[in-house]
Amino acid sequence: MEERQSSDLRVEHVFAAAQYRVYPETPLTEVVGLMVRRRLNALPVVGEQYEVLGIITVGDALDRVLREGPGEDEEGREGREKKLTARDVMTRAVLCVSETQPLLDAARTMVNRNVGQLPVVRDGELIGLITRDAVLSALHGRRDDQDEREEDS
Image (cartoon, rainbow, N blue to C red; front, top):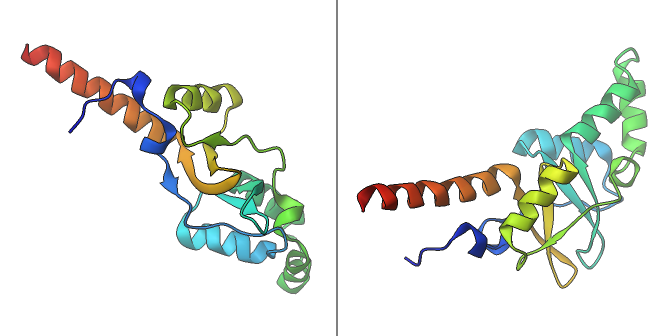
């Protein structure tokens, strides 16, 4: 297997293919249900051509659920939630990265912007997500490999 330096790593070496996405008209109850069932930290919101229009994080969803208030009876809350859509809750200003972008640049962006994941796009179309965990694992793994090689010499 070819050894790569941290500076040679690209987003394409680390990102996970997009398995789940929602559309702006998707009811919030479906969005939250999918996030809970699949234990997703974020869901990209895409348009007809799979272009990224926004993202909904667990924090966004929880904030909306808390704002709706637990004091109401379930019927009233469900009625309001059914009217809410992904468009109502999503964060619209989403920074995306390209699969060919250096991993270190993506990592710096995540830290500087305090985001846990970034959508990965190719020709404007969503192809996956990159997470802080994956980036850290990739960069840490490279250091461990280097440390072991140095100890062996």
